[in-house]
Length: 354
Ligand SMILES: *Cc1c(COP(=O)(O)O)cnc(C)c1O
Image 1 (spheres, helix red, strand yellow):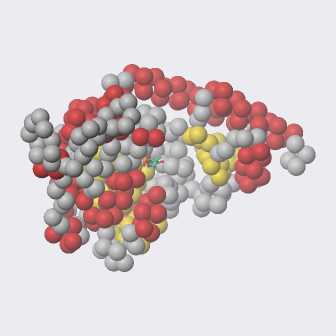
Image 2 (spheres, rainbow, N blue to C red; image 1 turned 90 degrees about the vertical axis):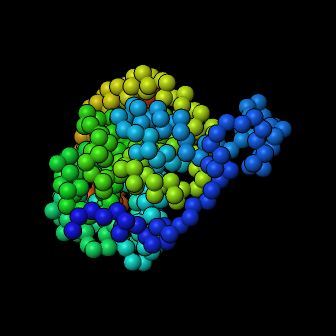
């Protein structure tokens, strides 16, 4: 049995007649727009946002496609990659019947989206080295497993998942394999985007929230075979990416040099922070990272976490997560912020409680 997209899609989605918006229906040029009940007088602020945005984000997609060596019709632009994750559930997973497979410890949104959509989650843990076990994944997936989520570099562990292992899953799984590359820009591994041409079951997620420094705009991307992207377009809310977001993303895409410089700085600072953390006595282990954060095992995670909060520094306490026992996840900040963190940890060691 080969990969058959049609049979994976939920019946109601296959039958769905999508909402046809005014801006979606009329694609030509005109001078007077009386078709969408907008306010022709304009906006009560300096910039005019009185018109609905392009529902298909054509300008943004064209630029993104060009940069990534794909076609615009292979790109979905969403309200954060979290929207793409949610849409994947809605397209493929029948509530209470289908299930998805995740490889913990990993990004929490996969499970939240599953819960929201009333879809069961199968867990195949990463190994103690945070590596993927493709055979265990294959054994864990069943007839009704529609999605497998792989995150590389993985959050919260920071490591990249071995490419051959990911391809192994893609080669054997007849559902949709989602590879979340939110942190890909911080590592030397190359993206799997070019593989969408060879694998009709591959969806690659990227985001403007991390390396691009635009988390507040809420823009994420999915790259896949055109047939899968058509399904995203069918089920998405018509105006899912605002005019402000589309405009600012286009501006950012003209400043790629600045983004690359920022990435290089963060990668350099990651090394400095990692070295300094390793010299702190209450730090048991700093895991290698391909992302813009470090997973750090400390002597008493809850205690360190609370102490840092008293010092006005907030990190992510991941110590209750299986395989991350005793761990805090620390985002690589500015040199100034990272120094403040190191100083606070040095102070912790001198404090009477420790
Ligand atoms: C931060 C992050 C995202 C980004 O989500 P957005 O909705 O695009 O902000 C996606 N996946 C992972 C693993 C992340 O850590």
